[in-house]
Amino acid sequence: MSTELSQWTVIVPCHNAVKTLRRCIEAVQTQSRRPGEVVVVDDASDDGTAEIAEALGCKVIRVEPNRGPAAARNRGAAEAAGEVLFFLDADIELRPDALARAAAVLEGDPRIGLVQGVYAAEPMIDDGPVERYKTLFEHHWRTRSAGRGGATLFALTAIRTEVFKATGGFDEALRSGEDVDLGSRLPEDAVVVTDPGVVGRHDDVDRLGALLEEQWRRSLRFAELVFRARKAGPGRSSEHRPAVSTGAFGPAAVLAAAAIPASVPLVLWSPWLALAPVAFAIGFGAACAPLLRIAARRGIGWAAAVYGLHLLYVGTSGLASAVGVFRPLRGRS
Image 1: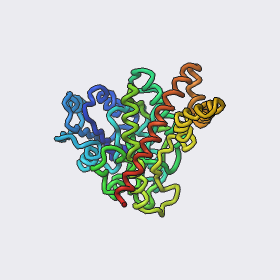
Image 2 (image 1 turned 90 degrees about the vertical axis):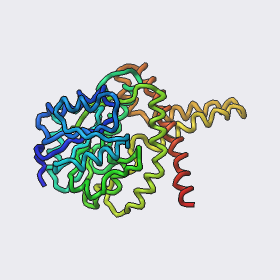
Image 3 (image 1 turned 180 degrees about the vertical axis):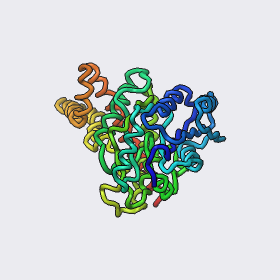
Image 4 (image 1 turned 45 degrees about the vertical axis):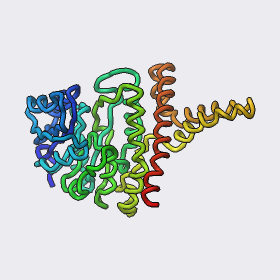
């Protein structure tokens, strides 16, 4: 199978993406090595998204009614002519060498079935501190997770077409977690690689409520995805096995985030127990020290803001994951 970029199809699923789509597509069209085709799947937008893609010369597929990213990606893959599919979210602006770097990874080892990139440390469009925090955190953990194995996250990901077909495609019943779920169905011999040289700037959520709501929804799926992955078969080596856990934050951070509010009532028994939440807060900071050190380069004030936002983010994720555990358990009882 050829990995020449002329044999690649870039697939961009989108819904009401008028804010970012032009920059996304123009970044693809100005790559140092350009793909053979760009397919934009407009998932029932009502803001002129499809018209932007058509004006830029893309192949546009209109989907009605809205069915979510899994269905949009599957539709794009079904229409694609390329031997490699590069799935790209509409709110990402690739660096000029991103596709060339991904192609080099696939060309270097035929065992690699999928190569995914990372977010840049700076946002595509800077809309404030919440977005700056989220972008920094996503860049931090994805870069730390670079190498072979790990979760499959299809925001900027190349996959050989034959490998994609072997999975059966994305589960269209899922509105979130569909990318991680697909990873659990990869062929046994398909190696997953995260390359920190495949980079794109992301336009992320910029309001605290939206950030926490998004993470709550995604984390509710966590337990279900764990059970799905186990059913898919445990026989993959660590090099080939995509983890269901994203590795975004470890159990120490989650436990410390939960323990801080849980330990506050202890002060009713003894004033000395007021030290417990302080100790857990220090423990949370220690668990997140690498992220906080990066934030501190912009000043102690920004590091403190990142600490607070990250505490809310991790706490939300942990609580939602715990709630999500009961869904699969009820289904099996």
